[in-house]
Image (cartoon, rainbow, N blue to C red; front, top):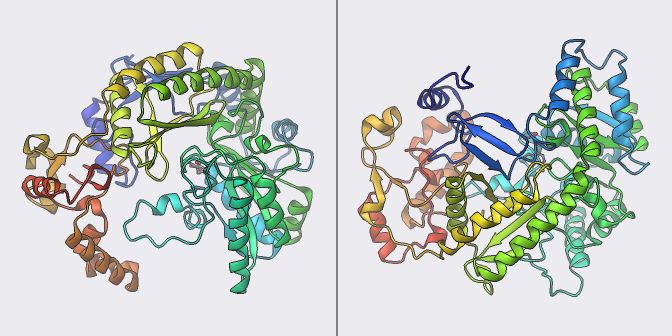
Amino acid sequence: MSAEKLDKSKTLFLRKKHVGPSCKIFFSQDPIKIVKAKGQYMYDENGQRYLDCINNVAHVGHCHPDVVQAGAEQMGTLNTNARFLHDNLVLYAQRLQATLPPALSVCYFVNSGSEANDLALRLARNFTGHDDIITLENAYHGHVSSLIDISPYKHHQLPDAELRPSAPSPDVYRGRYRADHPDPAAAYADDVRELIDRAHEKGRKIAAFIAESLQSCGGQVVPPAGYFQQVAAHVRRAGGVVIADEVQVGFGRVGSHFWAFQLQGADFVPDIVTMGKPIGNGHPMSCVVTTAEVAQAFASSGMEYFNTFGGNPVSCAIGLAVLDVIGKEDLQGNAVRVGQHLSDLLEALKRKHPLIGDVRGRGLFIGVELVKDRLTLTPATAEAQEVIYKLKEEKILLSADGPHRNVLKFKPPMCFTPEDAELVAAKLDPVLTGTGPAPFTARRSECRERSQQEDGEHLRRTCSATFTLTFLPVIWDKPVCRVFAPEAERRASAASRRDRRSSSSQRSQTHPEGDKLRDHTCLRLTSDRLALLASSRLIAASDFYVTAREF
Ligand SMILES: Cc1ncc(COP(=O)(O)O)c(C=O)c1O
C-alpha cells in the first residue's frame, strides 16, 4: 500500500486552506512531501531518498525499531497520567539523573521544549522572588508567550522590532569580542554583569540567566571556555539562577560529553537544565531537571504542579529506549568520530572556497558560516540559501540559520556515518564552486508573473500584478534579504507605530494597509520597479528581501 494518502498537490492545497499561514514549511517554493524515514534517511512520495543533515529530533535515527517497539508495547499495555505510581516514570528519572551532576536531581516531565523552558522560568522566579530574565542576542527558547518575549531570534523577523535588552551572543567569530581578544569569556560575561547593573539601577532584580549551552538558531555559536562559569558568578551574586537550555544540543550530540554545558568544565553546573527534541526521538516529551532546593521552594508555594501528559508511561518507555540505544550503539562516540571527520572535510572545503568563513561546532553539531569577504565578514545570506536549494537537488537536506541566515547547520541523526559525511562534502564542493558572491541583477526574465488562476484567492485579494523572484530562494519563508524601499519602509513604520497604539482587535480594521506593509514580504513590486531599484544600486543582494509566501 502506498504511504501517500493524497496526491501531493492536494496535500499542498489542503495545507494552505486549513493550516495557519504562519506555520511554515521547508523549501516553500518547492516543498518536499516526506512519507517515511529510517535512520538518517527520509523518503518522498516517489521513493526518492534524502540524506537528512538537520533532524536532531530523530536523535537515534528516524523510526528506530527499539524506540518504536518500546512505545507500541507500552501503548498496548497502559497509558495514563503521572498521578498513579508507575515504574517507567521513576526508572526514567533515575536513568536521566545518572547522566547529570549529582546536584541536579529533581525532574519535572513535560511535553515540549517550550513547556520545559516556561516551567524553568516559573521555577526560577519562584525560587528567587525576582522577575527579570536575561537572555542572549539571537536566542530562541520557545513559542509560548513567556518565551517569545525572551527570544530575540523571532523578533529579528519583524520589521521595526523593538528588542528587549539582551546580552551579546558569545560569538568569537563575528561577535564584539573575537578570537584575537585576550579574554573573550570574561569580556562577554562582563556584558552580562553590565545588564544586571542596569537592571538594578532601575530597581529591578534578576531571576535567571537563560542560554543554550551552544547557540543553535543563533548561528551554531560555541561560547569561549569559562564563559558560563563567569556569567553564573555574576548572576548568582545578583540572586538569580542559571538555566541551561539543552533542548537542541543535549543527549550526547556534542560527543565528548552527554550535556553541552559540560563542555565548559566540571566546575560549571547550571541550577536548571531543560531538555526536549531528541529526548523522545520524535515522540513529544521533555523534561526540566533542577536542584532539590529549587524544587522544594516550588513545592513550598503550596500550588500543585500537574501536567496531563508529562511523564506518562508511554513517554517514559520511549525515553528509556532512547537512552538504551545511545548507549548500545555508542552514538556519543559516533558523534565524536563522525563529527570530527565531517569537520575535517568541511575545513578542507574552507581552504578551497573563500565563501566559507568559519567552520565550528562540537560533535555532530557543526556550523559553516558563509561570508562574501573573510575580512569584512559580510554575510553571504543569499548564497547560503542557494547552497541549500542546490543541495536539495542533490537529495541532501540542510538548512541555514543565525541572525543573517548564512550559517549552514549540521545536526543530523546521531547514526550519521563517515560515508554520509563524505557524500555531503563531495556534493557541497561543486555547489560552492558554482555559488559566487552573486552580482545582483533583476532581469524581467528572472521574474515569473503568476496568473490569477495559479494563485487563486490570495492574489485576487492583494493585487493584480505581483512577481515571484524565482532566483532568490526562500527557506522556511525566512526572508533571504530585505527590500530597501524607502517610501514603503517609512509608511510601514508609521503604520506599525499607529498599530501599536491601537488595540490588537482594532488593528486589522484600522490599518489594513499597514498590516500588509508592516510585513515587508507583502511589498508589491512590478518587475520594472525591481529592475530599476537593482540597476540604480538602491538594493543589493544582501539587503533585498522578497519572499514568495504571499504570492
Ligand atoms: C533551543 C530551543 N529551546 C526551546 C525550543 C522549543 O521547543 P519546542 O518547539 O519543542 O517547544 C526550541 C525549538 O526549536 C529550541 O531550539
